[in-house]
Image (cartoon, rainbow, N blue to C red; front, side, top):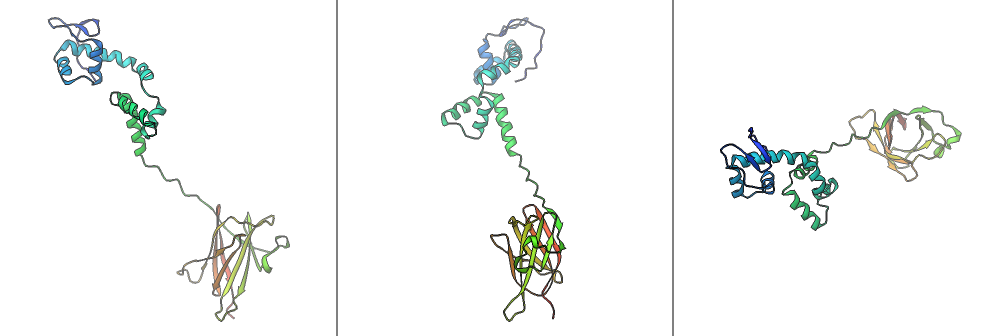
Length: 252
């Protein structure tokens, strides 16, 4: 509470302000403290407000209380952790009630609870999407050390992995092909950290990409492909790998 009254009167004690021609304030410090904290009854508040000496005494007492407020807070107020738990409704019911009663009369703790509520109201920013390394796989000469799958005809590589591919003509009446592949590390170990593999026809970009079936051992299979030029996309947890042109089947 702010008191704007200022006078040159002498003060012998808080609550006993001597003002020429005005009756001294009759209320003690405990009563003035209730008035300052806003806990006084309407009748008491009216009586103090009508007395210039009491208003002046309350103003001066409020200045002293403000200086001592940090010490009062340490002695009387819940610690920050307790206020946080109260705000989160995580205290035992009895303690929650005790803190609630305290907050009804403590403006400093009310301000802290209001701050917690304001922080909760600020929307959390979504974490930025994970950015995978984008790279192209280049055609390489197969090596015996990698033990190509089923006589794989093609081998592509990136700085981190080898991609082994084979195509098989289907045995049905419809002339389609099956793409079989697997990934290996440079030391020949199977690479199983696959999230997806898909192919897109280069000469029919309007058609949807076709997803491959991923096997538990890290290999992948995609059946029913027509002959043509395809773009292959391989997604791992850290990389997005593109083979920009893979010829499948023949036109003969």
